[in-house]
Image (cartoon, rainbow, N blue to C red; front, side):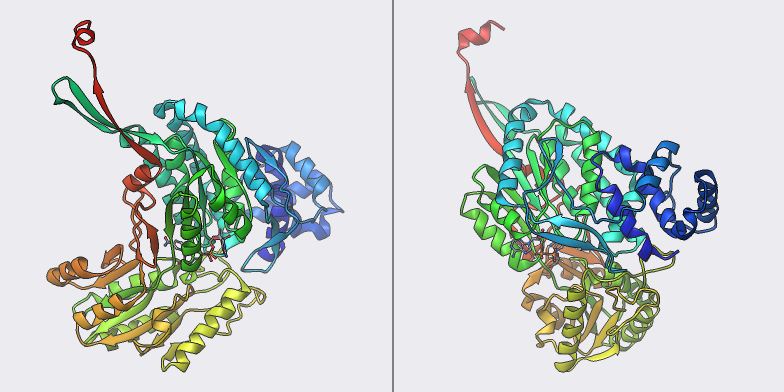
Amino acid sequence: MDFRTLSFSVYSNSFGCHSYENCRGVYQLFPFWNALVGTAFRLSPSRLFGRLQRYVSSHSWPRGMLRPFHREARERSMSSAVTTQVTDLQNYVNGAWRRSTAIEYVDVTNPATAEILARTPLSTSADVDAAVQAASDAFPAWRRTPPGERVQYLFKLKNLLEENIDELSRVITLENGKTFPEAKAELRRAIENVEVACGIPMMMQGYNLEDVTPGVDEMQIRQPLGVVAAIVPFNFPAMVSYWFLPYAIACGNTFILKPSERVPLSMHRAFELLEKTGLPKGVINLVNGGKDVVNALCDHPQVRAISFVGSTPVAKHVYTRSAASGKRMQCQGGAKNHVIVLPDADMELATQIISDSAFGCAGQRCLAVSVAVTIGEAQKTFRDSIAHAASSIRTGNGLESGIQMGPVITKESKQRIESLISAGVGEGAKPIVDGRNTKIPKYESGNFLTPTILDDLPSSSQLANTEIFGPVLSLIHANSIDEAMEFLRRSPYGNQASLFTTSGSAARKFRYEAPAGNIGINIGVAAPMAYFPFSGWKESFFGILHGQGRDAVEFFTESKIVVERWSRQETRKF
Ligand code: NAD
């Protein structure tokens, strides 16, 4: 089956419904309707259904992608199957789906096929005001809801995410392009964050000490901030939102999310699931849009804190603009991640892991290795093995089985990455594997590049310090670990640094000295589990408290110190 004819119908029909239950059958039937549309008009519904079932059973689909659908929904879907209008997404405000007041829209495009899946409204400051008002109104009752009750909604959310993981993964692949297994791995980390936030009744506890002076007790308690917001990037359409949402609401805040306008469908679907948990209206709100929504959130006096993840220039902008209205900020920015390969490394392991890191998710990961610095003899062995690994990667539509790398997000991204590769070549690098000008059969309109390896990139080149955010690995050679560490120190970014070695003392030196927030020793993507904060230094992070883990609890709460004295008489009564 050609997925180019599938995705369009899936979204033109499912995202127009406010209730997923009402359009569930439509969602599941339409791919097959499309496949059979040429013959469907000549078949009775029962014969058509029989043919669909035969079609489905003769194809291999990711597990759970298809589920039985109901007769009623099937009939409804038949009547609307000819409608191919692209759906304009709505916002979720005060417990209801609402049309945005936007006059401009952005197409949501499948990067593998170039088909338009939906349109994102570029919401206005009036839409932001409505969401902030709803969140503000919901706050007093929500903060009084006991933490143990608040997390019950998260337990429900975890179950809903588990039940719908295959369908959600498929949505991620459709809008972002990463492979289905990569999308599923993304959701696993999202679910892990929900699980960790279920522990808020323990994690949010303060501490106390009796008799700091005779008869006087002192305690620290944590209280929610109020209305908080998160602004997220395109590369993890589902996961990044869960670095913030579960912790924010479990701590008693009310929440506004602005997804990336390029990939809004995963969180649209997630909000349909959140709606099913029965969360009180106004506790969670979704405002679609671009920079106007971001700026309105930064400026709004009732928004107490903003969590941002995206590129460094926008992270800086959000950080400084929000500071002007006294907000609490955590802004995660871009990256240029180095790995050092020592000659004593297990070269087979290093090759496999570094290849996964550099080319997984088409290099569109803030923890993707971008520069490998080889020391001594590692230069030749690693260069040969990584070139072989890169050339063996199967690139294509991430929904097809066996595909290891999908497209990049937009045509502009593809062009930008290709011109950065050319710039690197202009600066003296040798493209020993060249992924430019890739065309994938059947997907000529997709934004595909295959992996690229630039050998001998001069360490002083501009590209050595430029974030590429695509499937490109540059190789630099150094004579010693100290010389290699110097490259890392010069980098403006500090998101991740990795070392491959079998030497404990080299590993310790690296852990001790490497100037980055996330360190990998024989690890290519040092993504912290949800119960550790996701760190980041230098131009990769602006703020103090990071997302995930204990930092998240501190970020989403205010610390209050109480010093308490009761009269002796009063005390004696008890
Ligand atoms: P981006 O900065 O273009 O967009 C991020 C968010 O900011 C989006 O919601 C977008 O709508 C908004 N935005 C974009 N331009 C804006 C502007 N001029 N004013 C106000 N708001 C604006 O980032 P992206 O392309 O979506 O994501 C890729 C970037 O994110 C990469 O640089 C990557 O390294 C970074 N990233 C960092 C981390 C991390 O943890 N440090 C994680 C994921 C992605």
